[in-house]
Amino acid sequence: MPVETSQTLDRGLRVLTVLASAPDGLTVTELAARLDVNRTVVYRLVSTLEQHALVRRSSRGRLHVGLGMLHLAAAVHPLVRDVAVPVLRQLAESVGSTAHLTVAEGDEALALAVVEPSWTDFHVSYRIGSRHPLQQGAAGKALLAGREGDLTPYVVTAGELQAGARGLAAPVTGVNGLEASIGIVTLGELDEDVVGPQVVEAAARLAEQLA
Image (cartoon, rainbow, N blue to C red; front, side, top):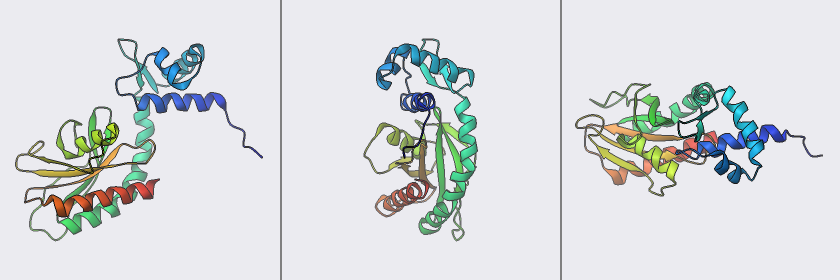
């Protein structure tokens, strides 16, 4: 027996999904075309979502995901963090570098979980809650790669967020509603051929556990 569903709720959720994948925003007409829904229906959906701050309208009249989504996402962060910490701990101990999980919040990268290795003489201290632009650092650039569907398995940077620090990060892909990356940061030498596959494997393992 088919399960009854709400067509209006389904359309509203589709609005949020489509807008989340359109960083430059969409007009009502463009949104209606992507949803294959009448513009009048889209107007009503958008107006309702705006009242709950789940959709916002820019000065140019383009529609974007609203800040209310951050409050909903914040409720999911503890769950993601709890699942990620064992994965990060194994990665940190294996490569001897600080490992971190970073998520996208708008145009910023947010460090959601950090694990430092227990056996090294020195390592980079990386604060949970740290933010930086997506265009800077390995974690942010890996998030952009995942957002844009870039097939590059990982991103490497040097000195972009801290002088002398090297970073390597891979996007966590295949988890609906989550833009995240797993990475490491070190002040020492970084052997990409050794560390890269381990970071990619950690990102894939986290995605599998969250899917």
